[in-house]
Length: 389
Picture 1 (cartoon, one colour):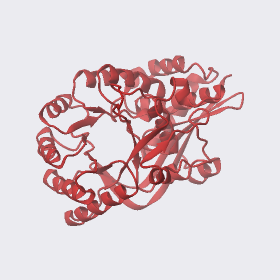
Picture 2 (picture 1 turned 135 degrees about the vertical axis):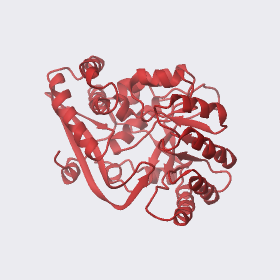
Picture 3 (picture 1 turned 60 degrees about the vertical axis):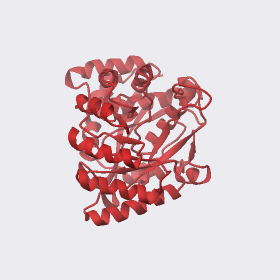
Picture 4 (picture 1 turned 120 degrees about the vertical axis):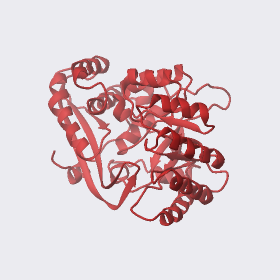
């Protein structure tokens, strides 16, 4: 079997409303799917992290840089292909967009391998440690509105996500430290004293400001404080973890095993959040997961994107060993964006229907059992939303 084509599909649509987080507002939803075709008719699907113009730039890397390197290769030689591509792109970027692009291709190769074997991806990895995972719902995005409007809306949205059946909820911050504490207080009021909530700063604080917010989160009994400072600020992460009781999480903006080795050896994370569609794909994710567990750092995958990304993460969460193990081990969760996302809800021939699963199963989502990722995108849907790059 040989690879005959590597194709990027950039999907976009205008969202019902503008949303934001600490770095920007956005009004258009994007997804970057990668399709790897073979001479025997099997096709694999993957996804690259990155939106908007980043997705369009990554399409060029996938089709103009990576595709010529691997045409004619055996798609089962995943590790050979990964290292060939990485080594040839190393001089031009060991992180960022080259790794995002490689991630989508690698995920598609794993999908092909599962289809060849007739097995779901978690079986190729070594089996399922769990046949379902709890999901947490995130929302409470920033808008161009007053602090008072944010406070009222965040309390209502948090309660609504709880009532949807999710096991926990996550909010965004980024208005400023004192304003953000008011938002966190509103979320705690909305969900009550016993429901878990997490706070995602998207690296908007200096270390002193992160301490200010983090101390408030201790009083509010938040579960974790996500990306409080810039991903490059390893010293800040270490100081925050040592000085705060709330769990410090992060890592979605880190790439490959070498980047992850540095942040794990720094001991700045209570919870690691690798992004499989960015760090180098499934091949590299498994190496990063082993590194995290070697440092006794639990993992809750960062999940963003279409149903392809969600399906890949469900397979990986099923195959993740418990850490440290025991009768009642700590368990990972699936991250689920509760805002409007047609590329997650309507992309597949057979939808995952996660919100229905969560509502009817006590907050749990099942693992797809079909070969490879266990899902198949609808080509008619793709053609409807695909844009030229």
